[in-house]
Amino acid sequence: MKIFLLLLLIFTSVVQANSLRIALSAKPINLDPFFSTDGNSQNINRLVHIALTDFNSKMKFECRLCKSFKEEVREGKHYITFVLKSGVKFWDGGEVTAKDVEKSVGYFTHDPQIKSIFRFAFSKIEKVEILGKYKVRLVYPKFDLENLSNLSLLKILKYKKAPDHHISNIIGAGPYRISLVRPLELNLKPVFDESLPELNFKIVKDETTLALKLINGEIDLSLASISPRKLAWLKKSRNDLNFFEIPSSNYKYLGINHSREHLKNKKIRKALSLLIPRLDILKYKLKGQAVLARGLFSPAFTSLYVPGPIDIYSPEKAHALIKSVGYRKNSDGFFEKDGEILTLDWKTNNNLATIELVKIIKSIFEKNGILVKLTSQEWGTYMRNFKTGNYDLIMGQWMGFTGADMLNFVFHSKSIPPRGGNRGRYINPQMDQLLSMAETEEREGPRNKLYKQAQFLANQDYSYINLWHPKISWIARKCLGELGPFPNGSFLPLLKLKNECSK
Image 1 (cartoon, rainbow, N blue to C red):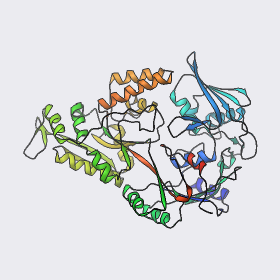
Image 2: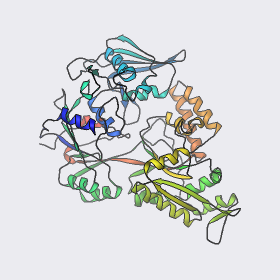
Image 3: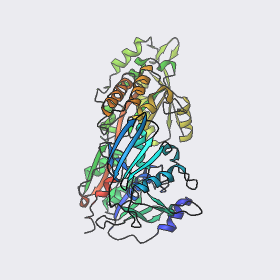
Image 4: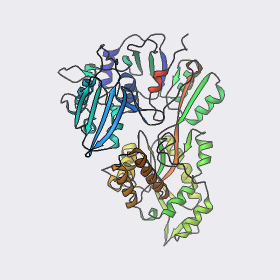
């Protein structure tokens, strides 16, 4: 709150009449690029600052400040060489050069005044080599996929030394700069390119209010969250709005605790998957606002997506699998073995939409002879139980991941908390071997082949129970024309906006 109020004092100015009004569900928490960790802050900083590379609509690396880049591995070290665009300017008119890349790395890694939250990630940069005015090389001690993917967070900027660190010390090189900050409003003004519209972000937390603002023409573009039900209603009732959708890179799944005795058997895990009516949930509950998942990576990841079958709801097959491992139904209709009822300890957070979905699946499980003890918890307690393995089932979602290194984070046996995200305690030596081979493979083609094999194995093992990839939905007045959302929710497509709404 303190940072937000300081921003209010620094950036307050008059919002121009020709600005585009854009709705967000939540305000950016920290717009300082050295400390931006929430999605809206990072996305605003994609417009305000510039990085060497970022991700495009196919979740592949794409130059922003650079014209081209090249990766090499020599004698075990990882070299990434960038040729920069000429003529890119900081807000003060100075040109961005290779020397500024070197300085920015220093700001993010070891500046004692700043102490960026990203300093540990970028401390992997062993050396910055200036090869010319517009050519620079980053040297890493070893090859790692994160070396390149992390660079979207490394903003190239100038920094004015002052007694204390403050966002006002930063001079960026992005196409926009912040001109106004209020508790529920943020305005961006183009720096040099007058063809760009001003962007007036408005925080609209309530979806009914959002719908009314869209209907009344008070919002030109909504990037805000909206329920499938409300979105379906708008699609049906409003022909003056355009709807732009794309499967997101996010992954919704049922997490299984593989250390629990009754879930160690793959037949039980598969039976649970067969008892989820995905097609019905997608049609009636989600209103088509998702695509069914075939693994961790959605179709957005064109080089990693693994097409494959999806389990279709089949109580008969599920019952047969459960019976094949010794369970029989008791007089109450529940599966039982050695005097113990097949019972699942299902923990969930207190998000209402999640609870609704969990209760639907819980009801189906119990109708099919599996007892479910459901506990709804506040976020901190829920995450503590999740990380410590105090559960049988959870409904989880992975968000914000950008590439194949995510497989290592969630499926390698060395990634069991606190060392990583393998919260299901999934252990398979074959998986470890595939991931270790992929991690050291320098060629992209063979490396992706290994990662696809790892994903196929994860599916075969029911390491997770795949559910779906939610869609990203942007709603716009038709005067904005065509828009192309990115799977990761990036705001970069806003750089192509043409303001026809104020004419």
